[in-house]
Image (tube, rainbow, N blue to C red; front, side, top):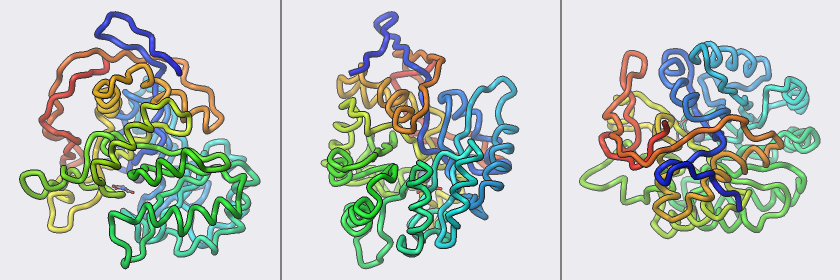
Length: 351
Ligand code: DOR
Ligand code: ZN
């Protein structure tokens, strides 16, 4: 168990955290959100679901440049780039990605599973040569773990994915590094705890804080809609138990996914919760509520780096027990973005 350094009783200091799953978007949206992540995190695994998606190492290099240009001049934030896996990603692209030194994972979106996933994988069998190359080069597969079969209930898609896709994949590629991303169910927690091979999982702050009731409290609440969708309370409790356990297989990935307010408060609202502004404080609340602050540093700052074979960040951040109000909205290009728990009070603040 790793312990945080306590300064005064109402302050905690931890190694600067990393966000192992982040959507930064592009253009004006990128310029609006990049500084939020950079203020909280040392590094982040940058999702490639742009339009068009980041499918080649060359595109990842260019996107990385745009991210660096959008950061505050003094920022030391490091974007860890990913490639978007398609039915046609050539195995040689994996070698190029590895040799570039800037790509740290390959993202599996089952086609149709979520935002901008239409170019995703229709059948993992089509990608076997590429997945073998990833195993060979040690490039992790970052998985959106949901089946897209319309016959499967949306609340069951993650659990069904484990049996239909993940178990067979793990059997055929035992040495592939796999991150089961933004897990939402007790079945996923159980799988990750017991899985053979190098298997990790990211957990978002919103899935630790809320169950599916949040989607319908007092009416339809689009700012609590994300994919995988929030689940029952028993699942949330299983996620909390895993996150606070100190088990090195579980680490933070915010899945902060900004959408313009008008696209969320819409007859067909987009999936995604915006948490880049206050993710560390949201996670701190979860750990505090569960008397687990001594394990916050492992989850936020150590486990993910160790899984990816990287040193942890050298800097520190300090959190103070101090109430503050989450803004109702933030600038987002010409529009605005509504952060998770907008207008509510959080008991921890990064200082
Ligand atoms: O809620 C989500 N939003 N889940 C995803 O998988 C994608 C993301 C986005 O890009 O908006
Ligand atoms: Zn995501």
